[in-house]
Length: 110
Ligand SMILES: [Zn+2]
Image 1 (cartoon, rainbow, N blue to C red):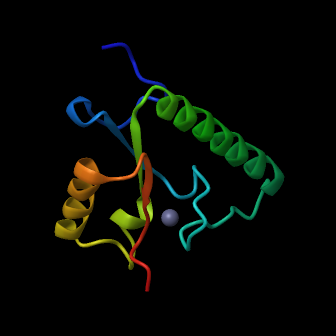
Image 2 (cartoon, helix red, strand yellow; image 1 turned 120 degrees about the vertical axis):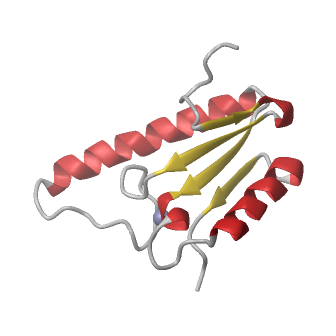
């Protein structure tokens, strides 16, 4: 199979679905794990905005190709509001079998 745009972390060809595990800082998730560095702030902002723009291009391409896309955010995997592993597995399984074309799994909302 030809490489998919953006090199997804997990590919499920039978479900025509891909999963990206994304760091909240690098991909600018609006959550509590997004802490801006105190130095070179402008440089970081530009860098992270560029990442974010590239993510959107990649996700659009995958959707156009008929793939479904799930983003699992770092904050769902670690930190105080992370999802318990069994919940995470069932969330992913539900999505694989009946999910929207685009979905995100952030931290548990408290
Ligand atoms: Zn996050």
